[in-house]
Image (cartoon, rainbow, N blue to C red; front, side):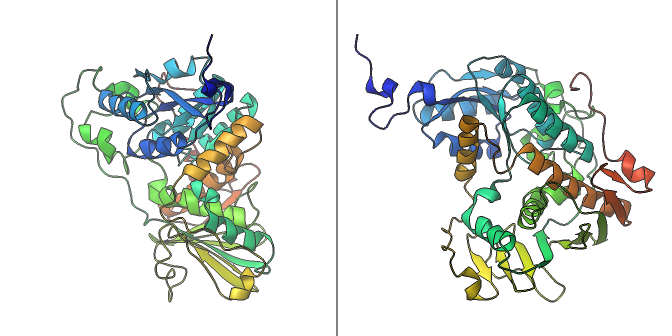
Amino acid sequence: MVVPASVLGKDGAVAPSNRIVRGGVGLGPRGRKVLTAFLKHADVQFVAVADPQQERREIIRKMAAKYHGIEGVQSVPHMETLFEREDIDAVLIATGERWHATASILAARSGKDVYSEKPCSMTIAESIELDDEIRKSGRVFQAGTQRRSVPNFQLAAQLARSGRLGKLTRLHASVYKMMDDLPPLPEQPLPDASVVDWDRWLGPASERPYNEQYCQGRWRRHTGLSCSWMLLDWGAHTVDLCQWAADRDGTTPVKFEAFSDTHLEAAYADGLPLVMREGGFSDEGDWIDGIGTCPVRFEGEEGWVEAGDSGRLEVSDPKLLDGFAAPEALPGVDPVYHARNFLDSVKSREQPVCSATVARYGHIAGHAAALSWKLDRPLKFDPETASFDGDDEANRMRSYTRREPWTV
């Protein structure tokens, strides 16, 4: 009997016993980019995709077959089929926002490790529920806030956390302009469920008439399909980085106030300000020219550091970088390194850099800031009880009701 060397892990191959078998749920354009990042790692074996849209299932099946010559990828409309497979170790959740937490919880309950795109939750309550369920299941969870795995952002946070900037005085997170939800799209004839399973596509979201544009990415800014009026589109990344830099991963700010559609502020219990702005870090200044999208800025008594998606890192004084290796410039924020962190965590069973607990507090901070904008008033928040002090309306808006039968 002849055994191929690849089976034994020789000639650069990864032995089957060392591979992580993966499935994917809802892999549209963003999901395909993240899946490509995973397929770049030799210890990944992708075997199945679930999506209520037939066209997208077929795109992923052909893509996986072409990329590493993977044949026989299972293509199904329902995610439960993937979750029931005992050979699948982990799943990639890259649906629209309405499904992220619910699908992640169902996957974890089925014994799967989970990488979920962001925002990982629709509300404050769902952020807590997701973290609690992941802890209970003992599964590994990675939020798709991949900038924690990008060198220039890592070094910026390291400068802040190490004390090189001195006592922190202000954190700056770039965010999109806040925008109210759009009116519903006009009703169109419902396609056959084999082409688009509309009921399944909506999932936990409230019932609404079908329009093909929802399924083509126009679901953003529609009530129940996306969250927090655009704040967490970038804020899921940038607020997360500010939390990390200030060593606040286990808490949130206690005060939130929106000054305009492009300027919100928060403050932690010790008074440290967190500023969320679209245009720049002050009324007089802007983000450093060419720093890239999703910029953050950390300021301390001894200086400041700024980083963005260009891969660059800027500091107030070059001496702040003494003793630190210059970060590798990686423009474009390829999620391949974040995928590697997740895969290593699946093998070691240690927490990844963006665990469910990390996502919990960063997302709560974003959701609370968005509520202060929506309600047009300052809000006081208790991180221990995850509730707003003396504001019944804000507290009612911490949660929502999932549509049957997609409750958890």
